[in-house]
Image (cartoon, rainbow, N blue to C red; front, top):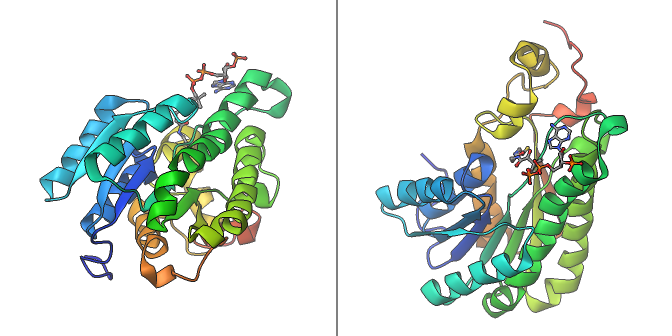
Amino acid sequence: MSIFRADALQGLVALVTGGGSGIGAAIAATLAEHGARVAVCGRTQAKLDATAEAIAATGGEALAVAADVRKPEQVEAAMQAIEARWGRLDVLVNSAAGNFLCPAASLSPNGFGTVVDIDLKGTFNACKAALPLLSRAGGSILNISATLHYGGTPLQVHAASAKAGIDALTRTLAVEWGPAGIRVNAIAPGPIDNTEGITRLLPPELRTRAERAIPLRRFGQPREIAEAAVFLASSASAYTTGATLVIDGGHWLTGMGLMTLGE
Ligand code: COA
């Protein structure tokens, strides 16, 4: 049950990149639950279809468009599909991301570049392609960042660098596009359950230690990111731009090491 009104986003059209799974899928479903019509894009049509079908099953309107954010022409085509279907775009959520664990010393240039291409350049590609439609609507952008770069996170130089770039992009576009009525904000999630970030990157045997390094002593839920996305997409945040909302149970404040904080 949401704290927000069911019609908080009524009339708005949103696009969620990486909307086929994890945090992106949760955001797509939650925006729809609050009245938005939602397009999801990503590389895997089957995952996108599943998200769209789940939204439709709860009475929402959804569109699944396959597009790799690394390919500007595919992102442009997604915008055209949204314009053809709904004639507008009010909210762009950049959630598409790639990551894996690898020491910098053995990371290939292409490995580093691939993650920067998806996370950072993909976010830029989607922002750029969405600009004409967002300008018309006076819409908003929500980038999914991270806390990896607040300190030094070993094995993730590629993702940390890309997310640091996303923070720069968030602030710069907030300044450049604010006069057009476009707000640009970010969410920096900590460890969130039921995401590839946890299932792929955290060995299960480290989970208990990881939880102890989080002041709130638990991992977050996708819904806890998605409800913040509702706030940042809604008129409740009409004067908020260039902001990054950290949602991590206080994890980054501890240095994010897998240290034990006590029982
Ligand atoms: N360790 C080291 N290098 C790796 C790697 C790993 N675990 N996984 C991929 N790479 C390197 C590859 O070796 C390749 O570099 P090379 O050409 O020098 O060998 C480069 O990264 C690209 O890999 P490729 O598999 O061709 O990329 P892709 O576009 O198919 O996949 C990834 C993109 C790498 C990000 C992949 O992990 C992915 O698709 N992940 C799904 C989404 C995800 O990660 N979500 C979690 C978000 S937190």
